[in-house]
Image 1 (cartoon, rainbow, N blue to C red):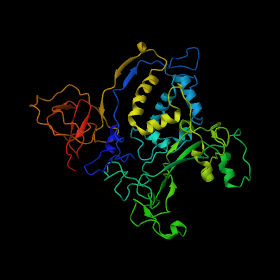
Image 2 (spheres, rainbow, N blue to C red):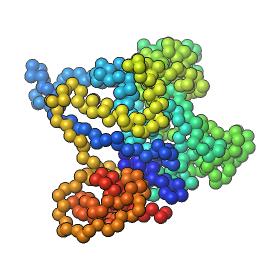
Image 3 (cartoon, rainbow, N blue to C red):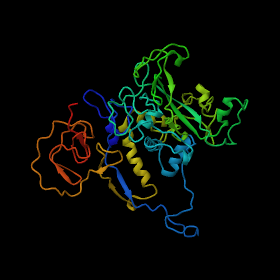
Image 4 (cartoon, one colour):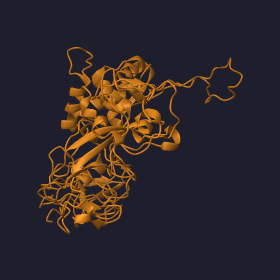
Length: 453
C-alpha cells in the first residue's frame, strides 16, 4: 500500500511520480491513494500438514503425499466460484474480493506455462487495478521502455517527473478491451472441438488447433506515435500505410485523427486467466479452452481472429450468492470504482481464508504490527511499532509544520516527538529517505515535510 501511495503522490502542481520503476495509472485521481480499513488480524497455530503415519513414504513430519486441492486456472467463472464455495465457504462477493490479490506479482511460465502480468509497470502496488483492468476502465497505457519523453520513468531509483502514460487522440486515458489468445506452449488437447478448414490456414492453427494455455489479453486504443522498445517516433507517412503523417513529431501526448490503434504492452502483456476473467464475462470452456458456443456463441480463440476474439461479445456473469447481493460482474465493477469498497471486503475475506477449517479458539490472533517502507528501497520495510527507546531524553517537542504532504498521513501535522527504529526525533528527519525529510503524523502514519515544490 505504501509503495502505491508513493507512486500516487501529488505535488503542488499536480505531477505525481514513482522512484521504484512503478506507476499507478490512476495518478491524479481521488481514488489513487489506498488506506487499510483497520489492522489486519493475523492468525497462527494451524497444523495442516499432519503426517500420514500409515504411508511408509512419509519419513518426516513436513512431508505428505496427499494430493493438493487447487483451483483450475483454465476454468470459467462458474468453476472459480464453485471452488471457492466448496473449499472456503465463500459467497460470490468473498470470491471476487480474494481474487484481487492478483493485483500483485506476475505469472511464471516455467511453473504453469502461463506468462505475462496482471498489471504492467505496477505489479508491486497494492490497489484495485486488477478490477479496473477486468472491467475495461480507462487507465494510462505504459509501454515497455525506460522512460517516456513526457518525463515518466520506469527505471528503479530514478525519480520521474510524472507517471502519465500514453493516451488517446486527446491525450486522455484510453479506452480498453479484451481478446482471447492461445499461447501454443502446450500441445492441443484432443478433447477440444475439431477445427474446420485447411490446416495450412493461419486461422485454423490459431482457433484452438494450436496448444494452450489460454489467456485473455488487454489492449488499449492509443496513439502509436512512440515505440517504447525501440525509442523512435512514428511521424512519417510510411508508418501508416500511405495515410499521411498522423503523429506530431516529438509529441507523445496526442495524435492526429485516424491514427489511434489497439495495442498491448509487448512482452509484459496485461492478462487475465479464464479463472479471473470468468468473474466478469460468461463463457463456456472445454479443458481450459473457451469455445464457440455455450454461454458465448461466436467466440474465437486467437488474436488473428481479430473482432471474433473480443470479450465484449460474451454476456456478463450474473451469478448471485446470496440472491440478495449484487451479481458477480457488478461486484467487479464496484471494486473497480473504489479501493475502499474492495479493501473493506478483502480484509475479512483473507482472514476467513487463513482460518479456514479451524475454530476461533484453536488459533491465536493478533493485529499485525504497522509497517512502513517510507521512501527507501522497495521491499525494505521496517516495523513502525518501535523497539524500546535507547536514546537520551529529548527536549519538549517543537511546533509541528502546519501540514505534511504525500506519504500515508493524509496531510496531517507532524506528531513530535516520534520514535523510529528505537530513536526519538523532535524534528523532520531524512533517515531512510535521503532526498526528502519526513515525520510521523501518528503511531502508524507518516508524511513528507517539504511541501513547497
